[in-house]
Amino acid sequence: MVCNQNHDQIGNRALGERLSELTEFEGLKLAAGVTLLSPFVPLLFMGEEYGEKAPFQYFTSHGDPDLIEAVRKGRREEFAAFDWQGEAPDPQNEPTFEGSKLIHDLKKKEPHRTLRLFYKELLRIRRDYLLGERTGLQVSEGEESVLMIFPSIDSLAALAILFYFGRRTGTGQVALPSGIWKKMLDSADGKWAGSGSLLPSRVEGNNRSPLELQTRSFVVLERDLDRGRYGKDAGTKYPLEASSQRPHRGGYYGLPLRRHPPLTCCRAHVIPEIANGRTLALAFEPWCDSRNAALNASCSRGWRRRRRSWTGSTQDFSI
Image 1: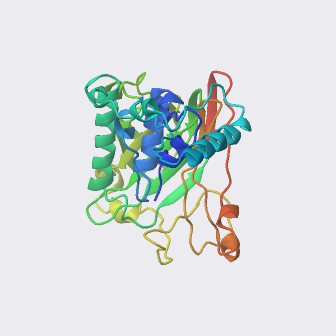
Image 2 (image 1 turned 120 degrees about the vertical axis):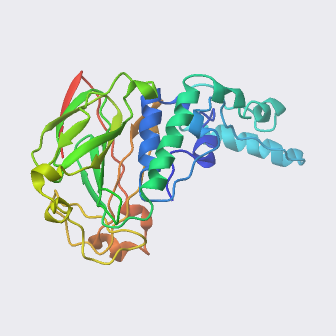
């Protein structure tokens, strides 16, 4: 199960800010794409789907005066080490609870209405293309980008999803498998209140053509082989490489474009790092065979947090 925000993560901040208060609209769409289009079970926190603005603060309703004071003191001492600005609200005060209620009318206002429609479209893609059930997923990483390729199954076409986390418009050399790839969705499209897609409607694979992406955006491509060019057997002549190993818990995650130890199973984790009011990264991190021996000893050593550096106005990336 993966999420980009939950009650613990939000409620244990001093002021209870949601992700919608820590990043801009493009960042919210990018976080939604990474969460909902991953092969794992997505968890959505209440109001996330339309960018709820109300905080979710820590509140209590204790009757014991000693316990009430102990909680207040503990919260003050806990947050002193974080050097956050502002004083944490009193968890026992009624306004702390009332201020944490959802503002349902936001669903009808922009850009919240568009974000909710965007979530619905991502959930449709996840459902119609069985993204939670496919095996043989391939994942490769660049400095500020992640490429996922879902091989075709039965009557469903292959999908390629490219996430770009850079703070600058990026031009990337992306190694797509052979075939013609049609743009299904671009989070930067004006339809989704973006600044406009920079990608053509069709991209030819196997030639590392440069792809230009808007800042903090992602694109979903569907493979559609040109049978007139590649022949009637294009689907079998140009298959996507998939692992022959038995899937582990729904899928085998190979990294075909970088050197890697032999894999018996590989899991991915979406990690939102929030610091200084900005979302720094959402990254897939592999769990490799070389680390399996330490699984029972300490799961936390299997994950690495990665921070991105954002400066300048343009960026090149390669996958």
